[in-house]
Amino acid sequence: MKYEYFTVLLIAFFFPFILSFSREINFYKKPLRLIISIGIPFIFFIAWDVFATYKGHWNFNDSYIIGFNIINLPVEEVLFFIIIPFCGIFTWESLKYFIKKYNRNIN
Image (cartoon, rainbow, N blue to C red; front, top):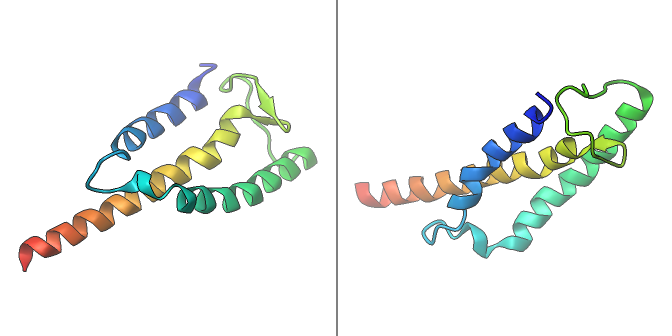
């Protein structure tokens, strides 16, 4: 399936993105923190990925990617380093919120 990698990324992104606008969690109110926490690793890992593919350490199967490249990387690979950290940070912030809420209800 040509769109498999892209589809998996969209599915992973959909619910965390929609739920990130929840008023209780206030995730959307700290955009600079989010940009910095995704941006710094993004630069490092994209550079690493570009170098590794250039040297032939790994490649991407054309059967599973769209075919549009950014800096010789499939667009899906570039999006991976944005979407997956976003989902991880959202999950972390959600857990912090629910643990704090649970602890308040116990006391």
